[in-house]
Amino acid sequence: MKPVPEWATKQYPNIEIPVQINKLNIQGDSSDYHVLWNAAQKIKGVDGLILEIGVRLGMGTFTIMNSCLANDDKHRRYFGIDCYGDIRKQYSNKLKIHAKYNLMAFAAMNEQDFTLLEMEDFEFFNRFADGIPIYERKIWETNQYTPEDYEWKDIVNKYALVHIDGPHRMQDVIDESEFFLPRIPVGGVVIYDDIDKYKKKYNHDEYEPTILEQGFEMIEKCGSKVSYVRVKEHD
Image (cartoon, rainbow, N blue to C red):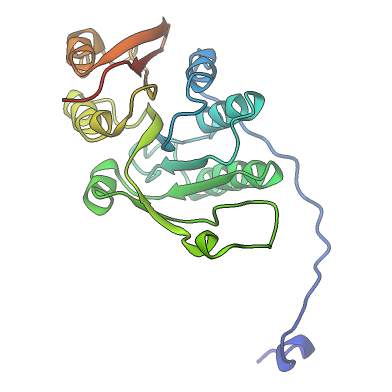
């Protein structure tokens, strides 16, 4: 057995560990990231979470987060959903760990909050149909609280921005849309990805009228991505 370190024998140990942070290396495997950037510029003042389905290397969330920061749209809560298992030949534990490290480190450096949920989309739907519990003080930059500031738990079931880039089968995209679109408020946006790649199993042009009928208008369409903003309340 290894000997017990001295600090483990003390009450209230306080350990300082000098670290040299590795250079962040956030990559993208798609194109037209400006569509994400422009969509994120639209949501300042819109209440709700920011969520990406299909995080993979992290460039999508990184682009959205950077756009919000550039627009002085701070103190957002970012979530990623990815089980890192659907593209088996390309995914690995190492890829997942690096993507998670890069995004969480970048978020922390900029005082943002990012959470990666390692699950499939339907698992998310089942677990968070009534919203995601958020534990957060009402004020950020002081420890001087009023009694109201201790009301720090919210169940949030609205999404200011959703980036749908997970499974690209027609039924998967329909299921994701049916879950998220009603939860996007007026002014919120949704982005669909890889609309030009998987025509045989997902034809976005066929599904687009359903999106528009639910109170959305197109913002921008370019190459692999298309974005929409809600302009009318959901019926």
